[in-house]
Length: 169
Image (cartoon, rainbow, N blue to C red):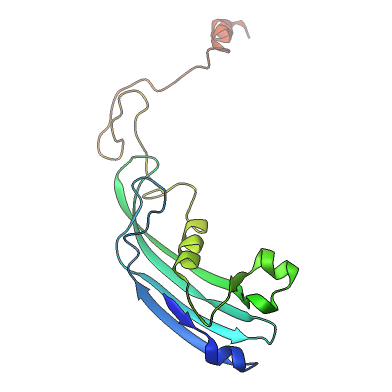
């Protein structure tokens, strides 16, 4: 995703709109079993504030993941708002060097920036549905598909001795 802000940088108060649909399937998210199913969509509006460029918009991605409970493959739609400050390197303050996206040419790629935002907005654990019952911890059966008769009541071995005192009360 190439962005050219040459015209926008010259015009304080100016606004530019960018819309992309980019194939990210070659990017490795670093998470096993997580892949892009379709191109990533980004719609951004960039405003020149005089001191920096303020970018905001929306990013959407369709991912294939494995459910953290039942391990079945699932589709996950990711859609989130994006906001960032883009600063031309010679004009960057010390604080902006730490907190903003710094660019040194009027035309630059934002693929890495978008990918970083996608990773930051991923859930800690993918769940196929709130009703997912997961796998049986004893036999491994997917409890969404089949019932098993395993005894899943596990007593903490540190507290097992207390089971002898059931009838004392």
